[in-house]
Amino acid sequence: MDLSRAMSWLAPGQYRNSPRAKPAALHVWHTPEYIAALEQAEADQAVSDAVRHRHGLGTVSNPIYPEMFRRPSTAAGASLLAGELLADGGVIYHPGGGTHHGMPDRAGGFCYLNDPVLAMLSLRRAGAHRIAYVDIDAHHSDGVEVGFAGDRDALLISVHEAKRWPFTGKLDEDGGGNCLNLPVPRGLNDTEMALIRDRLILPAVAGFAPDALVLQCGADAVEEDPLSRLTLSNNAHWSVLQGLMGLAAPRLLVLGGGGYNPWSVGRLWTGVWATLNGHDIPDRVTPEAEAVLRALRWDGARAGRNPPDHWFTTLRDAPRPGPVRGDITAALDLLCARPAARGDISDTKAPV
Image (tube, rainbow, N blue to C red; front, side):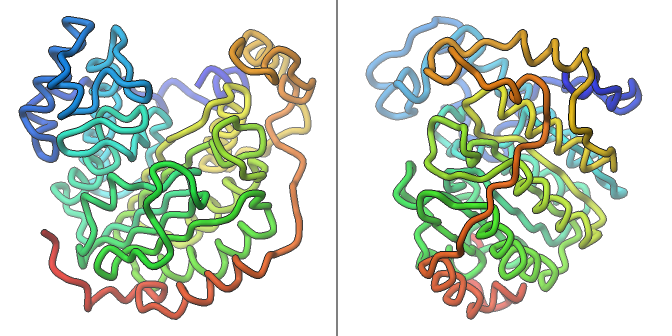
């Protein structure tokens, strides 16, 4: 958001502070016992062995920290509010959202709550009937699949790195018919992602004809991210978004997600905002935006100690094209033969 303001792309009327979701609002999907444990963990800054075992709190991937309830409940509040604000249609961008690993009774992968699930439930309460969820984070959207697998009125598409935590979302896992999971090999390039967009994502969403579309735009699939081995440029994310915008779903919610390099995250998500608003992305950022980028620190990573100059001066990466590998085309052939790839999920089982 600082970068967007520094580019003169964020007018005061386009920004709204998020409310913090109250526990009762979170109980629509999360268990009361879990929410109480999360609140208590924040208050105590410690958990018992029993709480750690049951709820996954106080682990390496779900650590104790001072705002471990307040921060995710603020992100969840924004997703819940977004569903209400989109009752009559429109577009909302919530980069602080996208925590797709949270489970009803357990934290997972730095996700203490599952705000995408809460957003989709809020959209339904506000009148949306058919929701398409597209996830291009490097990790499988396991929590969202738990929430909506088998739901005839939800289409779930996840493109994620194969053999990467949480090790779910295999090609043959269809969630009862409404889930299209595409695990991709290391080194996924822009050309391959464009093929995935054009053969799978856009036709499936168009065929489903949703009245609400949610895109989780995790920034950890780009080459500079330390937690994945994919090699996309941020152009690939923006192109997926542009394609989905062209489908003209009456409600569009764009969420953030993963991303562990602060420069690549900030540049990518600022470009998402530019894409949503039709702003041209210049070859060089403004001096104010450059100052924002130069003020970032990333001491824990080798790249952060000697960042290349374009991380300070540009938003757009150089494109990263490449050959289309046979295992990707073979996986697409299998997925595109399924009814869900045409938007037809009428034969899926009823939601549990």
